[in-house]
Image 1 (cartoon, one colour):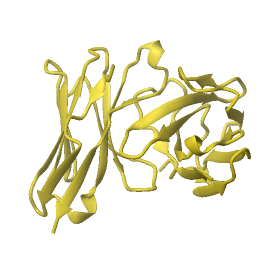
Image 2: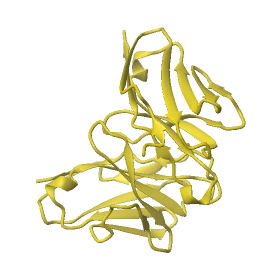
Image 3: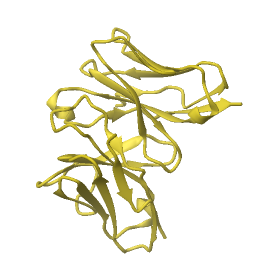
Length: 119
Length: 115
C-alpha cells in the first residue's frame, strides 16, 4: 500500500531556531501533499496544501513566512518552522494521496507525525 | 463553523461487544466519507470509506453506514477488540473545486475497548 514517511518523529529545539520536517511518499508520486497541525485532544487542522513545482496554498490564519513549505519533487515536501516559539510546539502531520490530482475520492495516506517541542 | 461533527468525545465498550461511532455533517455537497483511526503520537490510518451513492460499506469487522437525508454516518465495529482502542476521525470531502483534494475532519472520538 501507499506509504508516507515523515521525519523526524520528534524534535526539541530552542526558541528562535528553525526546524525542518520532511514528508516523503515512498512508493508513489504525489503532486499534492497536505500539512496538518494537531493540538492536544483536538482534530487535525489543515495548515497548507503543498503543490509540486509551485507555491503552497495556506489556510487562513497560517503565517506563510513562519511555516515555509517546499515541494521540490513528486515524492518530497518539507515544512520549515522558522524562528520557532514555544507556542509552535505541536504535533505536525503530513499526508498525500496516491492516484493523481483528480482522485479526490481516494484515501489520504498520512505520515506518522512529528512532535515538535520548542523550549 | 464545524462542518463535520462527532458529538461524542469518548466511548467505552466491553470487548466482544459492538462499538458504534457517530458522525454528522452539515454540508450537503459532501459526497465521500472516510473513517480514520489514530493511535497516540502516530499519524491517522485509513480504515474505511463510503461514497454517497451507497448507504453501507463493509470491510471485515468494520461497517460504515450513511444516511444522506439525515446527514449522518456511523462506524460499527463488531466484535470490538482491545486493539481497537484509539481515536477515530470522521472525514468528508466533495468533488467541488473549493475542497481541492483535502478532507474536512471531525474532532474525533476516543474509543476505549475494555477487556
